[in-house]
Length: 127
Image 1 (cartoon, one colour):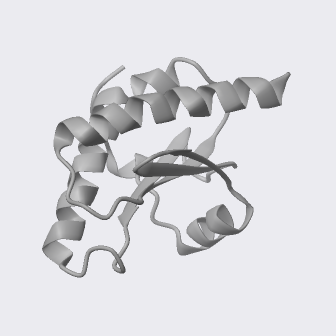
Image 2: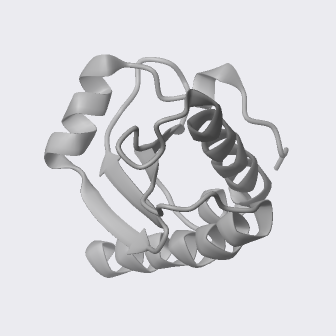
Image 3: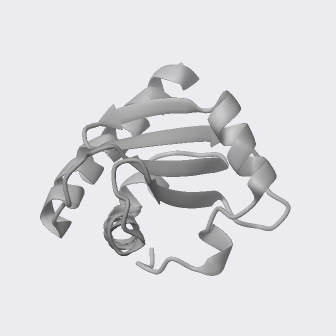
């Protein structure tokens, strides 16, 4: 498993994002929420991932972009937790819910248990 985050793994389809928020299932580990949806893609990718930070909580675009960069990096380094443990095609959206600027360690400390919660949810649903 490579630690890259290629273009084909990025969630960019407006239609799919709208469907994700309308029909997706959420898992939260404060300050990050994961919304996921089992779906299929036209290309050969198994997963598509998006990240977001609220404009309501962070007025400055610089701060929002920094948070999104931190979340993408944390996902990139820990995506093996998801890929090695589940089957199927999924769309993911990671939302930052906190109101203060996080550090990389704080994001990572929230991301790993969140991914484990997601794996448990999928295991429960498939039984």
